[in-house]
Amino acid sequence: MSRGRTVWMATGNRHKYGEARQVLSELGVDLRLLEVERVEVQADDPAEIAAFSLEQIAEAEDRPVVVEDAGLFIDRYAGFPGPYSSYVLRTLSLEGMLRLMEGVEDRAASFRSAVAFRDGDERRCFRGVVLGRIARRIRGTGGFGYDPIFIPDEGDGRTFGEMTGEEKNAISHRARVFRSLGEWLTSA
Amino acid sequence: MSRGRTVWMATGNRHKYGEARQVLSELGVDLRLLEVERVEVQADDPAEIAAFSLEQIAEAEDRPVVVEDAGLFIDRYAGFPGPYSSYVLRTLSLEGMLRLMEGVEDRAASFRSAVAFRDGDERRCFRGVVLGRIARRIRGTGGFGYDPIFIPDEGDGRTFGEMTGEEKNAISHRARVFRSLGEWLTSA
Image 1 (cartoon, rainbow over the protein chains, first blue to last red):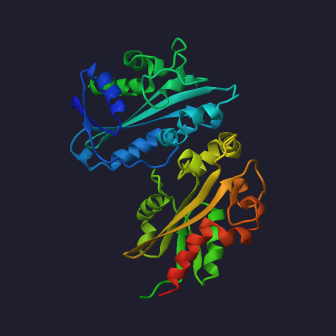
Image 2 (tube, helix red, strand yellow):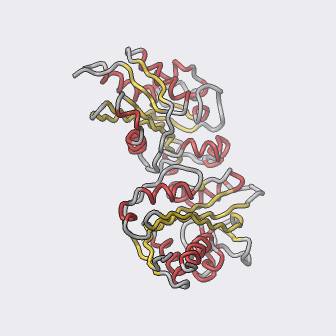
């Protein structure tokens, strides 16, 4: 089959778009921004949210479109804030998150991403995960969202917020999920 | 116009249904349970979530149906947990909420409810609010959800969890919103 090398991403988050675009460009896929209002359903699984959003996008009827949903999942709190990570960041802020983790020994957490892809009648879902832990204080100004309090297991102890974009993109959940998409797109 | 005295409520929460049914029965309206899967969208306003859910319910095409959405809104945290109250209770639990409020002087909060009603082509939205504050510890076993940590301003210092169902229904957000609905239904 023939797969397009141009894909549209429906998102209002320029950080996410920038990270995804970088990963896909290395695989020869051109990612473009589709500026549409995105409907997000309440669900525990990012894959379900992404798939639901994609079905609501009329523009996906005549071009390849992806929707990503992602979140920070903290083991100690049954995955909170998970799919509501952006809302929780906007209301509790990083300080509130650190307050929840005060004196908590189990600091394990993961960033999880799911990408729903649609091209005509074809639909695919990809996932990316990075394991790590919650830092004891805010460190670094890079990245966005929870990056300054997330320390990936595969790193050298720095938070995502203390890494360059290239360093984060080497191991992040988002880079992984978009690399899977890109490899699938270009393997036809 | 002629309005039906029987209304179906789409909810998976028996506590909410029980409270609403009690209020409406006092006004001569018979509330019945409609057991359907309810789609909840992510939004800051319960009215938006309730209205969206209602539009997804096919059964609403041939009978009067209501959907309620409600949440606890904490001033100090920009309304958190708001529309995600049930998810947050399931993950953070009441202990996590109290941890967020440790040492916090501004304990003001409100329970907010919105009900979307649909009967044929007619659509209405009602709202109910009760102001109060977050208790310093869990008190009482009545009610459900956040009731054991919410002290309504109009009460005598007890939490909703320390009140009887009748006492809570005299002042609660849910009783208010369903009383508004019931009064409108029976005023035709």
